[in-house]
Image 1 (tube, rainbow, N blue to C red):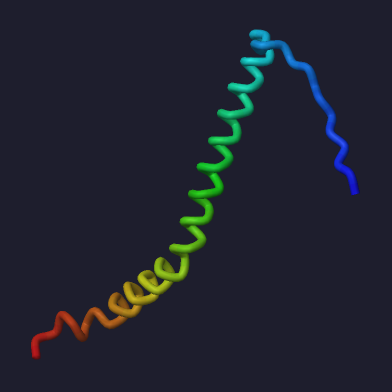
Image 2: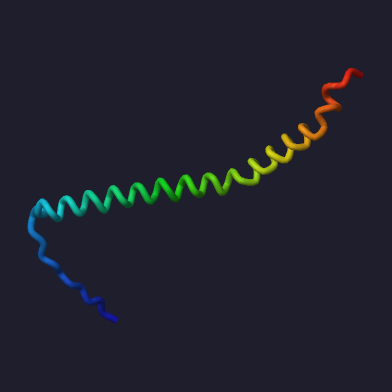
Length: 70
């Protein structure tokens, strides 16, 4: 089996428009990565958050037990 390669000739420096598009693409990529990381962190923290809320509600429902003198 033989590999076929294609050579593409590009100018040494990108034009201003191309450079701007490259910068825009990199910026959008970074923003999307940050958004995905935040979403993942929230998803991973959700079980602990729910457990904390449940514990807080249980303590609030039992507040008389904690406040009454013994």
